[in-house]
Length: 590
Image (cartoon, rainbow, N blue to C red; front, side):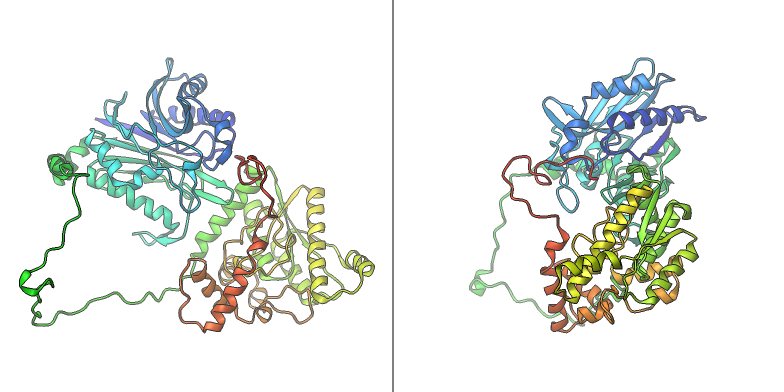
């Protein structure tokens, strides 16, 4: 017996239940027209709304009856099973659920799984907005003749959940997920992938191999608030082999035919599930009843443990060598694809802009942003703006023009001297630092006004090092609503800039804000970027920065801890239960 499976790597529009359901109906219709037609179509976690909807969850949650009615109205073709993740209203509660539906002329609900494990760490705060499922994990019969069970995302990270499903007779585990990409690493084939993708595949392969089941992992794609869902959905056979894998950061429809007879072969070759079933009564016999064991001593030694004779010959001590890898190393091609996908998604798909606008300073950060934008949007949809002040470096203007010429993007030059000096003349008594801040803010006025004129979204250029060290003008450099570089240290910016082809003369020159004559970033810091980046890497993880002078570490620590306020929106006194950003949390973050 076999089951024909299709997995949709789906990109929902955040907060748009009606629009997403309409698109899901289209996916089901498209998949049902494949030859051979799939028996089962699987969509990711929260496909009807997007994942990070926070306080908007009440607005996008629906009953299972509503969901099956809406999808049933959109698809009335030949019988097909569909598993779709959604926020569910159920008996006065809201759950993160997955509905297993049978669609056709008479749509019906076969099973609903409500997520049991709700993450509240890292970027997650799920338990604040939805309730934990109380029904546990259950297997159920399907129209294709086998048994299935569902685990939603975090559920699959707890091995017991998969074990329960397998013990209940599940032959296929359906795992809808909305797990953002984090980190980078190398898989068994030597390919560079987000580290979270590698870990996910390791988890589902382990589930399949240990329990002798097929696993269908369906991941979201797209970006929500900068957090990118990577796709890379997969089907795993009962031996732990990858049958098919989806692409990174792209919508796709994966298909596979699962031969259920392989279950018998896998369980015969490795009867771990049968062994567990037999041993389960023994393993759970004393569960929850045991008391801490008492430590016993030999009375003849007056309450001290017996001496242990020295082993002879002496054992060799084997340890691991210190990790010499640079912690700031990035896979530049993976980073490029990631950030290009981010810009496409944020500007075009989510915000409805076709164009981006970049303030080109002549430095590496703005140059890299322009290069990434040109790849994401096309050179005809990127505007580069030079905004010199009367004593700006001629080199900065020349290097900005070099980027414009190499990319072939639209360009303009707006001299901010008259606007800046007109203001400073009125207030008088201006020191260089204040003048620099006025120049920076005036440039943002220009950028945002040109944005409105040309309907082009301003793109940020500040890197992670500058942001952590507070080396930017508040409500100026860090103002643009979309920033592809904000999670890259300066040294990583240099590496990525070289990879995408930013001219070496721009990459290798000393970094400077070019606001004060002779000023450089590292001169202002009192420490080089390579050192500062590595110290920051450890400090923001709560680790000790070893191998650096105490003075250097303390210098970086002081800058980091004294500039938190610059990385936050204005602090508002909370008087009500609807304070913005505290209680009033909306599903759309722009």
